[in-house]
Image: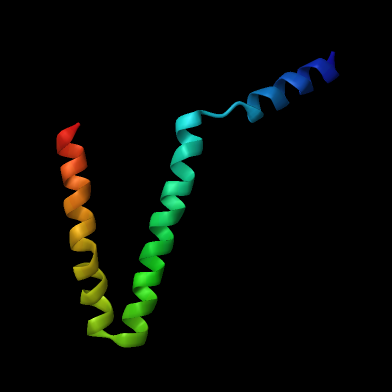
Amino acid sequence: MALAQTNSDIADLTDRDPDEAAAIPILLAVLGLLAAWGVSIALWGIPGLYIPALAMVPVIWVALLVISRG
């Protein structure tokens, strides 16, 4: 009886929400980009702060257009 109970406990631990599984790589990518931006600020100072932000302007424009188109 303890073995069956243990098996169900393991099954409960392995069941994961697919949305949660998809969110983890996205969050890790965002964390990596923020860390890279922080390193660029530490290495190059003010240009390391604003040049990546300027480079993201077209990307944000495209993202907003895609979101608004549905």
